[in-house]
Length: 446
Ligand code: MV4
Image 1 (cartoon, rainbow, N blue to C red):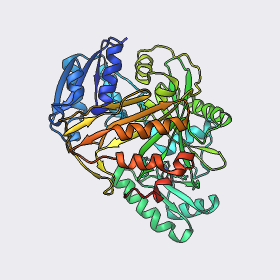
Image 2: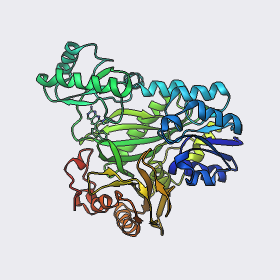
Image 3: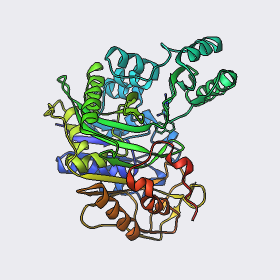
Image 4: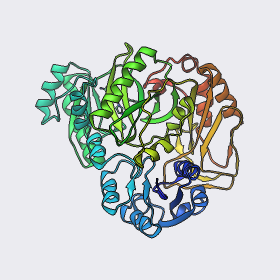
C-alpha cells in the first residue's frame, strides 16, 4: 500500500482525496499555486509544496514542477483528481518512468479512450452499441457528404480529439454540410491541435446516462450503477442524480453489461465512466469513456455506500476488487454550486466570500474547499461546492435538496444556488421528464 500520495490537483477534489488518504493511513502532499496559499487542501495535507504562480499552465498543468514536488517529497503515488492532468497520458508516462504510481489507468488506455474514433472502433469490436456512423475519420468533404447520405440526416459531426461538445455540429441536410464541416474542423484544430472529424447519426432528445465502472489489475471489471447527467448548460453539467429516473431494472442490466464489456475490451484498470446516449425508446449508444474519477462521483458513493477514492487507491496498489455489480438502494442528487451569477447569464463571480453557512442535516453532504473569508480566485474552474442529498425516494430527495438549498448561505459572491432552487421546483424536473436539451428552454431569470 502507498506510504505517501501527492495530489496533483486543488479545490474540493484535493480535499476529498486527502480525507480518504488520512482514513487509510497514507501521508499526503499538496501542491499549490501562489493563488491557493490559503486553500484548505494546503492546510490539511501533511506536506505542501508551492509549485508556481496562479496560471494553471505554470502550476497545476506543469509536469516538470509536479514531478519536482514528487521528487523532493518522495511520494510513491500521484493522484491526478479530475481535470488538469487527470487524462494526460504523457503525465501518466512520466510518472511510470520516474517510478511513482499514477493512480489511474495506463497511458495506453488513456490515449485509446481520448481518441474518440479509436474508442468507437474498440467498442464496435467489443460489441458495445455505438451510434451508427462513419467507419473511422472522414477524409474530405465529399467523403463526408457520402457518409452522411448513407447514414441519413440529421447527422452529428464530431472531433476525434474532442469531448464536451467542442468541434461538434448537428447537420440537418446536405446543403449545410460543407459550411458546418468547415467550422467544426477549424474549431477542433484550434481547441485540440487535431482536426480529425467523424460522423454519427443524430440521436434525438438523448439522455446522458453514464455507468461507473471499476477494474483491477487482475482483469476483473465491475459496474457500480449509473448516473443521469442530462441537466447540462453549454456542455457543463449542473445537476447529476442516481439512479436515473429513466432507468429500468432491465435497462440497467443491459447498460451495465455493455459498460463492463467496454472496460474488459481495454483491460481497464482503475475507476472509470462509460458515457451513453439513451434515446426515448431506451436504446443506448456508447458516447465516450472517461478514464478518471469524475466530479459527480459522490452521487454513486451515496447510493451504493462506497468510497470510490479508496477503491481507486486500493486498485492502484494492486488489490483485487470484489467484482459484484451494484444496484442503487437510495436516491441521490448533486447540485454543483459555482461562483457564477445564475441570474446574469452565469457570468463568473470570483471574489471574497464574506459569509458561508453550509447546509447540513440528515442525508446532506457538502464537498467544498471554501469557507467564510476565502477568496475565490479567477484563475480556475468556477465550481466552489457540491451539495449532495440522499433519501429513500427521488421525491424525498428533491424535498431535502430544496430545504438544503434554502439553508445554504453564501454571501460576497453570486452563485448558481438560485438556478438550482428554481430547477427543483420545475414540474418536468420533478417528474423526471428531461433530456439533454432541457435547459435550452429553461428560463432562470426571476
Ligand atoms: C451526440 C448527441 C446526439 N447524437 N451524438 C455532447 C458532447 C459530447 N459528450 C457528445 N454530445 C452529444 N453527442 C449524437 N450522435 C447529442 C450530444 C449532446 C449532449 C450529450 C450529452 C450531454 C449533453 C449534451 C448536450 C448537447 C448535445
